[in-house]
Length: 291
Image 1 (cartoon, one colour):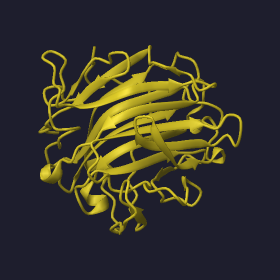
Image 2 (image 1 turned 180 degrees about the horizontal axis):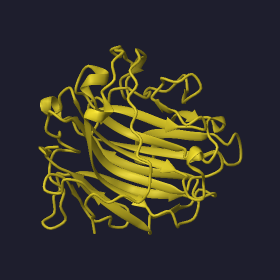
Image 3 (image 1 turned 135 degrees about the vertical axis):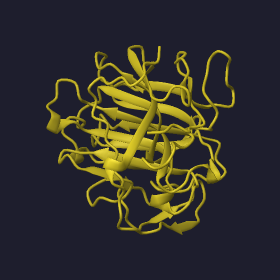
Image 4 (image 1 turned 45 degrees about the vertical axis):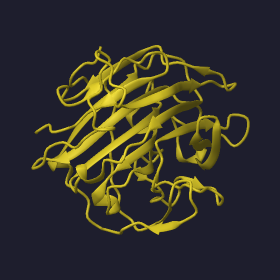
């Protein structure tokens, strides 16, 4: 059952870095230029609300993660000073000191202040061995894009209703974390997170967090999450945003479900989180929460 304002000791990190880089439209070859800015929001003036599942850290190690996320264009419903995203994050915090708390987060986001528009975009965020956060391609020694990838971190998800994302450790080769994207079983490799970036994630992952997150300035109300439809199991909400085909990936490529988990739902009158039924759940809502 979803628990409001529950913390299980995970370090929830959200770092916004603003750098002008060239991006690619999703599943198209057209190049676009990301708007450059040097200003970052004051974290003291930012509120975060989540509707997420996370593993409780007592399960076995895993070597990859797979999920299909519905993608939604919220258009003018998200304004500057607000962000809305759906993502999953793999972590390895169990039995590790705080300075070895690595993570890789992948998903889609709407962030007008960063990108200059309200189109949904693919994004990555990672915390490596040096403890600093890296968004998209904004770090010298961060995520490496393959030259033939039609989609890169920060790229627009144009006319896309869902995206399948897989992160997989190359256990028999380089040890890097390989990132794939596409639809269903038709996936292409976008690039990789080098093993050398990490300490606790250099061998395996131990935890996962997945669902929706919004952030907003204190002088605003919270934006929509997911599709903007309040997620519910009773009655069912088929138009709500969803995660499906949610699986851990084992050392030999086998898939297994998240069987030990907890949940967190902030502002439950405005955001919902459906039951994780084997490999699928709905989440999100219209927003409108106040600080």
